[in-house]
Amino acid sequence: MNKTLSTFMSLAITISILSVLIIGIVYQSLADKNEDHTNILEDEYNLQLK
Image: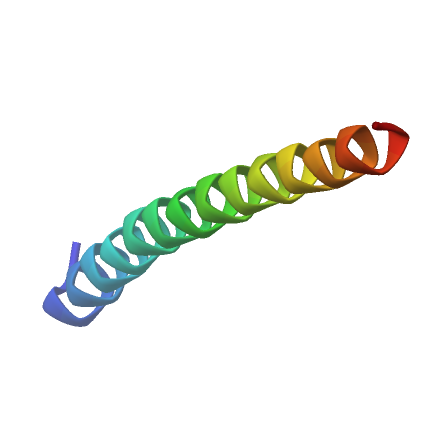
C-alpha cells in the first residue's frame, strides 16, 4: 500500500471516530435537555391545577 493511501485511510478513520463521538455527545445532551424541559412543563401543569 502506498504512503498517500495509508495516510488518507488513517485520516478518514480518525475523522469518522471523532464524528461519531461528537454526534453521540450532542445527541445525549439534547436528550437530557428535552427530559428537563418535559419535567418543567409537568411541574407548571401541576401548579396550574392546584
